[in-house]
Image (cartoon, rainbow, N blue to C red; front, side):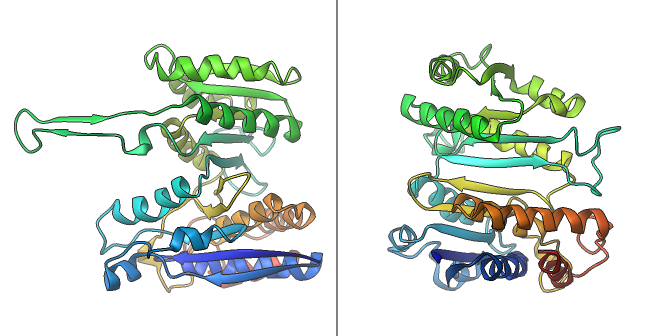
Length: 351
């Protein structure tokens, strides 16, 4: 029997409620498909920060490295200044655990409405692979004469050959294994960001020679946004840098029906990876048993696929799709037709 050590970070707001339903389904999958999840919960988040003044305690990163995966709820507390928890926990974990791939499937399930006119599940099914540890998010830069009329703020985008190449190789390999259109689209801005995306484009075509079965395409980020809305069916796998990836994946979430269904993974193929719903902590719904847990459940499915339990992962996705097509009225909190826990039970029953 396979056994996996999983760190659980429920986080803030409705995060614990979403995590509870995700774990409910994960444990059901473990029982049905004969593997074991060894879970340990960590209280990192806003409440701990308000009580102790620390975001992550000393030794937290080293301890988390001992786990195959992290199952995350949501980070964000209304009483904590924006940026403290996000940088101190989310970005810190991504960087320190070298989770250099952000993986975001954009898939419209039957029964879920998209804002796009005349588009359905057959049109919206692509994946965005975002470089996750470089770019503008490294925090490189600073201020000169801060607070004066002559203030200067500099934020630098850091792109290394190593970082770009490993992201691109992952994307080419993923596109090959996905085995659909076998088309990888590089999203950039070569006409303006002439240094960073010169590196990305050159490396894209050099690495692409090792994958002759994968068609290579390029589009500027603004064109990508336009085509995601007009003709999302043209995309298979999109690969891009940290900032552009952050932006277009939120657009992707809306195409697939909203944050209530969107899950993502922060992957270190050789280390500890982290799986999460991409929506926020939604504090106004805390404790009301009305938040949508499907994104968390889908994140759990992504985690199992990453761990090699593909049959269980596919079964979870199939169960979620059945719930979406047969039961759910809306992805919005309080409008689903079911409570948070009832929706988790429904997925578990179909599983």
